[in-house]
Length: 282
Image 1 (tube, rainbow, N blue to C red):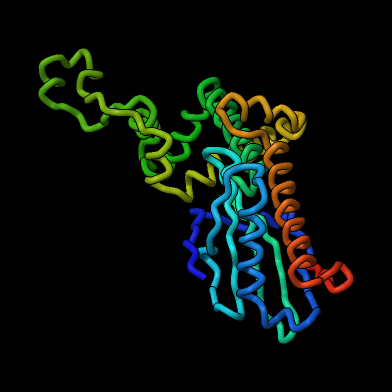
Image 2: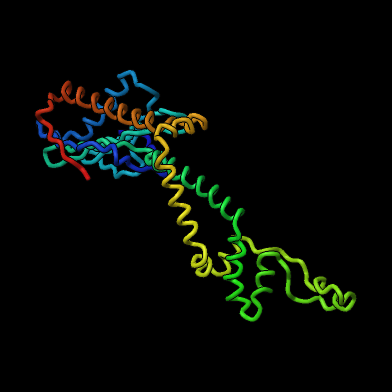
């Protein structure tokens, strides 16, 4: 069977929508893997599709003609968000093992979680920014670092970290204007949030880790109170399908493939539901 290989970058199986696998015990179906694959492709191509479909082989799966074939039926449901049904046909002795998996890009497969995580992170950045600007947390962080790195003169250390003063005296300026000793200090650049972390990650986390964690818990709690349908408006605004629409499209597309498969098996091989055994997969 000459079929193109279809790859979905960073894809994964949508496990929350997984269906039972099938064992078909009827007239040595395990010996007809290639024939079943060909007939399924033919039946799909002869049926008006709900959206444009690309037919090929799964890029990730091992293909063994006559024994193990995984077809990938890619539906272009949305320009940026294709979805696929992988149909695994495997010889299991005289029986035929069949599995239908929904496949999508990883972040689409976890659509709701991704949206929730992005919302929580955005809210956390806002709340933490407000906290950092409206409180004296920067000064408190500088005091902790000054106590360790400027043990002989912590106030001078705070001046270096918070205001950016360089405590190395400029003797020439001091001689010219001894009544203004502040001129003996050279203006530098205050330490940024990232510089504290790079200088001493352990002390940084020890000093401020609790506050971001508390704010993150607060942001997560707030977002839990937001109704799920609210995500719909954000998705429509950026031109993405809402999560519930995407899940309906997923399930409906797989059901369409399964219906064509059962019709084909009955028409071409006389296989009925009584010949199939459903197997729950983890």
